[in-house]
Image (cartoon, rainbow, N blue to C red):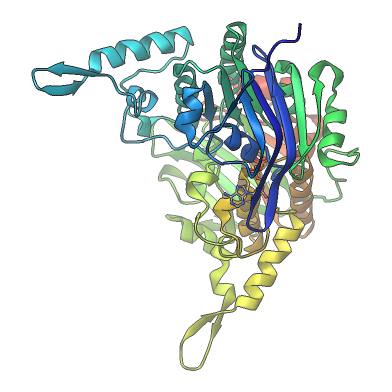
Length: 512
Ligand SMILES: Nc1ncnc2c1ncn2[C@@H]1O[C@H](COP(=O)(O)OP(=O)(O)OP(=O)(O)O)[C@@H](O)[C@H]1O
Ligand SMILES: [Mg+2]
């Protein structure tokens, strides 16, 4: 006999001003299975899941839980019926500790006389038990503000489990997890499915999807393409069904050759933070794509942010175009022709209420200012619009128009706007920290093409990346770091997964 689906969405449609985000989409999820949801940035994955979680009400269609039709007014309704969701954008309460974040809104109380007190002891014990059950190594009393992005993600996962949900929706859960943590998450997922819980798993990482899911549903432009057993799919098939065409190449044709001219030289740079990087020296040439690999904790972001003037250094020198540079703040770095796309761009990059245009041209205001004899400054709106449109086109940013507030764009499209912002500044040296995280396959190719164009024009690109294929596919040379030390620099053409992993896990063995 057919098992009753735990979640059944039928003919769901949802429109926002200017976009039909969902058009007659159906999804059937069986208990105890991992159901993957795939599609390009802006395909409608998060919107569909927000309908299942009561955050949006569909315009049309029905939702059934265990065969019974439901109407969710809000997320609390959904949680009461056993649906839990881990969001793509995290909003931890930084001034509270781990256990308070897990039990927020459900903190246990005890009564002493006429007064209700927070039952800290019970909360601590419950949290500890939950963390142990899931084998998550976190102290319930650590302040969340002190934790990194991956730990915040773990808290989110633990909270979803704590509701005893029958369906847990995970929207790009591994985008900020280390490999070890991702493995941990897969273990938790296996544990939950064995107990009959269904997981809806959204990710752009195809190897992950093929590995852990039972069924895969693919969406394109707000419509359902289809649902298949994962066993019947290959990466090639998934890609062509997502983008609606065959994609034969993952990387653009390589046509650039780095010059001999040194663009950036770093000599014996040591961080002011004793737990960060130590004595790092390297140089990057004009017209070169320089990759930086390493595991999380290798201090790659810290190194680049220090070169950019965002973090203090204790000793060492930075030379730009043959001149010794004094960089004490980001402004100094920008003046010297540098730009940096940060890793945590959702938190530090976008201004939600401003339009796509404002967010794109933000770093380039001076170039868009008209000065009149009266001394007044005006912003040249026509040029701002034209510049923003150029990158909306080049990066295929999915937005109704340039005036739309950026907060209404899908996660991946918000990231593309930020990349456009720095490309527009046209820097001589562009530093990209995990540039394609959360970005779909088609858009990745577009970003690689833009990188290739930049170096052809004699610019320099430094790319921190944790994705091996991208590091090897794009870099002229790859510098690998391990625990704050430079462990080796290898030629892109000769790089292999093994070589990079070796260098990333130990730094004793000097340059290879
Ligand atoms: N609250 C909203 N207001 C207006 N438009 C919205 C809103 N939420 C989503 N959209 C639009 O709906 C479409 C689908 O977005 P959604 O976030 O579901 O995409 P996604 O598949 O999750 O993409 P990604 O992989 O980038 O996260 C996009 O065009 C987006 O701009
Ligand atoms: Mg999304």
